[in-house]
Structure formats: C-alpha cells, structure tokens
Image (cartoon, rainbow, N blue to C red; front, side):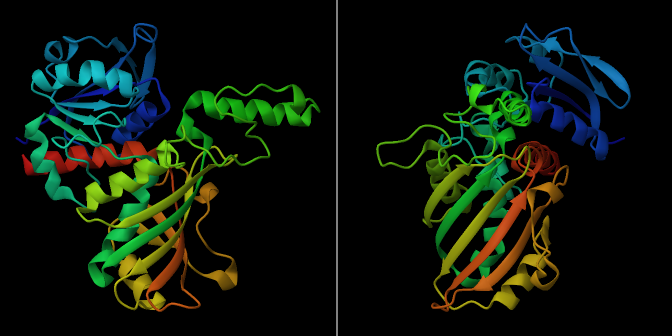
Length: 341
C-alpha cells in the first residue's frame, strides 16, 4: 500500500490557501488528512473540501506535531512564516513556504519544478522549500527551454499584475471602487490596499521603492530569477498593478548569446512542461488574464523576432497568479518532494 500524507495548509482562509484546497480536490494526491490552519481569529470557521466542512484549527507551535503533519504549506504572510515555519520543520514536516521570507536564504532552495526540481533535494538543510514570487514563476517557466537552446543573457520585463496579488482586501477594493464609479461617487472612494485609486487606473508601483529606484517587487524578479536558474542573467523589471482581479500578464524582451528564430522558439515552448502556446494574431488569439483564471498552465503568445537584432525575441505571457504563481507551484513542489522521497 502506497504511503499517504498529512498536509497542513497555513492561511487556509486566505486567497491562496483556498486555492490550495481547491487544487487538492482536483488532483490525485496521496492525501491522508488535510488540516486547515489559521490565526485565532479564523479558527473555528469551516472550509469546504470534497463536499465536507473542515474546521480551521488555530495555528500554534505545537499543532504540527499534534496532527503528525508531513507537509506544511504556508501562505499566511512573511511574519507568520518567520514565527512558525521553524516549528513545523522541527516537528519533522517539510515546509513549503509561499511568502518572501525564506526565498533568498542561501540554505533554502527556491523552486519552480519545471525549472530546477533537483534543488528540492536540499530541503533537508532547514526543512524548508521556498515558493518564488508569482511574477517570477510564470516568467522562469517560459525562460527555461529558451535558455537551454540559445543561452539567455538578459530579460527586460514589464508586468501587468492583478489586484489579487495584494490579497482579498485588494480585490474587494477594486470591486468597491468600480461600484462607486457606476454610482458616480468614485471621487469619494477610499484606497487602502494601494497607494492610489486602482479602478480605471494603472499603478507603476508594487511594494516599496528601494534605494536604486526599483521597487521591492521588481528586485524580487531580478534576484529570484538568478537563484532559480543558477545563472547570472541580467533582469530589468517594471512591475505595474492593473485593475483586473486575477491573472498576471508580462511583456518579455529576451536577449540571447546567439541568433534565435521565432518559429523555432515557438516550437520549443510548445514542448515545455505546463506551457500552452496561444499565438494566432490573425484571429486575435493571444494570452489574456480573463482566459487563464483557474488554469494551471502558463500561456505564451505574441512570439516575434526583434526588428533590428537577430538575438532578441519578444513575447507576451499570462498565468493565474493565485494558481501558477502560488498554489499550483506549491502543490507541484509537494508532489516532486514525494517523488524524491
């Protein structure tokens, strides 16, 4: 009889936690017991799983040992991971952390299974595997096959990131502002999740600005790409919040060490894991956020050669940030961890 696992979802009442639970409903995972965890405020509430109600338990330092947890998926914010992840690891569970807290820790592998699954073996160093930033995951999935073929040297990326990247509160702020717009009182609408009104607007700032005038979100893409791909690729990012609910889009300009052909690149990407090519401009077919919701793949289109340089490609990619950019990647890490153990 094959082994089954006790899995904890920390932050079960949040947007990503809810998606993780939905994914477990959809896939064949060797699950013995699913334990939803959250703060004292949410403890006692119910989450639905396979048409049953699971009661959320309070997150404590001892709950992982008490529930005999094998895999702990953290999606409750960096402060929570900083406080409780070590307790989960010390109890014997492997921690898969979806926050930024451990990502750049030299002793913690940062994993996208389609790109660097071999790094999962390093989980024993701290008992923790980090899940990258949502905007980084879909990008490096796309870069991997092209780097292998043409030797990638630079990425210039502009993102169009949905409000769900800021959590439920941010999504609710967009909806409220749109309701206020149709009630002719948008000028009275408050903004707390973002530094400016997000409805009918785009904001070229995600997270705080650093001393180099890039934002923290932009620097995450720079630093995480290098760590995941084990390569000093030049990355320049401009991260923009747009008034959509789900689905991050990215415009990529890629520079290689050798000349590259768009048709050949399209063929390579079509064979890459969890990549779907949607690239038929004549029929207005290309990736869009509205078409990627609840999907577990990254969609790639608008693939074209640069007009002036033979070693440059341009493309447009989209993925559901709550799935590919968070929950799906975390669950895939857990699946790969089980395979390797």
